[in-house]
Length: 190
Image 1 (tube, rainbow, N blue to C red):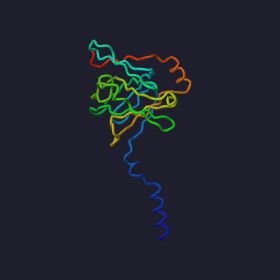
Image 2 (tube, rainbow, N blue to C red):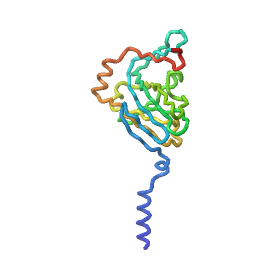
Image 3 (cartoon, rainbow, N blue to C red):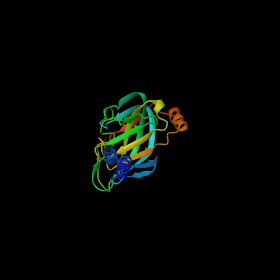
Image 4 (cartoon, rainbow, N blue to C red):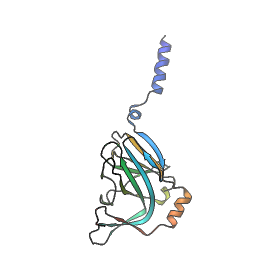
């Protein structure tokens, strides 16, 4: 009887989810151009561009501000939709196959140009960009991970999107990469 109880306890210990596993978000997967739906948001990476520098145009008549990098800028153009209640798109990271991750740059690319922090309400999807500084040798196989929750406190869903960055595609993007990419403030008069 003791042996049976011990066996049951061992089985439970091996097959019971840990605290971290119980708190982990639901992961939903998709690819470039596909709408990925979590329970409370949907996101589509519409396109990905690379550039050596960004030019940020505030739309105020001043020349665009230039942001250089030692690597490359990867700019993902997103469409985000709130499905149930208003939310703020707070978190976007690039994850490389070798375990590195890069957060969207919110120090050098102001809120006016990016999607992060913008309130999104159901029925009114928003488009915008997230920009990352990343070394050239980390691009191949990189995926974008996105959710409304910036600090992973308890996000309901996390979208993991394959950007289609095969070695051949990366080589082509790097070969055709522009010197700079112009981003215009969402508040600029059009």
